[in-house]
Image (tube, rainbow, N blue to C red; front, side):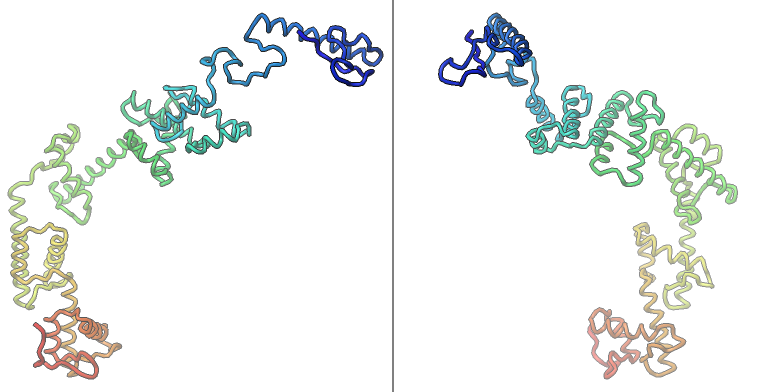
Length: 442
């Protein structure tokens, strides 16, 4: 080992070894204030000699003057296989992202627990300012999520997946001792779902697991309560009517009418519970609509048709007012036929019968006819169809007259109506009119 030179404060620095003293006896010429320095450098010399001796006997220890090993390199701590670098974990994260589409590795991920902890460490180090800018940039480039809340949501979702795998459902009990945190998380997801605060992507992921908006026990209790309420309503219906044949679309309680239909359908398919079957049987529920009931319905419809024919014979049309004093039931029945036709619930045979009677399906037609009748009455009194806009006693007839002129000018007024108004002596403008003998487009 060569001698290490120290500057001699008493000699000027020159070339070669002049001005230096040997490491073996560096302080022989020093005294006075250099006494303590002599002791320190003596200890340093012993340490350097010992280090040189160990380097000669152990090749893994670099001799003095060699470059210091960099942390994470093979020369720092044993063979390269015993140390995982940041880049190794980053490559594992890339593999996770390729499979799962994100970098949200849950803590304790069973397939690679150390990767989950590494992800947590990156967030913590960045938060404390201890993560290198290069690492931050590389993580940002792959869409790394720095939010801890996202990590917690993913962790709870992973726990829910495991719970479903074991239990076969996602209905974690509210006070489940196995994981109170998971139970609270499930409760919050349902609350956010109901209030509309749950993001759509999270909602879709929960739905894919079979997650329900209400807990299994709560939903089951709610459905049971609703069923019992309908059963009670059916009991009241029977008490007042003497039977359980609730008419379809019964206005007093439309939900009860549909519920009755559902019970028959479920009993027929074998999906109605045995205890519910027994409760309905005890109430005297009729599981099949009898032929006599169908016959009564047909007879009732035929009676209404006969009443409508009689009305038309008296009034010349089928425009029965809703509150027709001569037969209030007929007015409601006529309105019902229009509703059923609009919903597609009127049979073709009945449609044909009503069309033969020239039944008017549009209420707007009836309104036009009423106004036309008013105009006829006005002309018989005033010998003109020019009704002032503010003429009292005719309820907006002047505005209707103006609307007919506008519609005719636009070409949207039906030809038959143009003909009827012209025959009445209707003037289509203030300056001229159309005589009854004028040619009207057919």
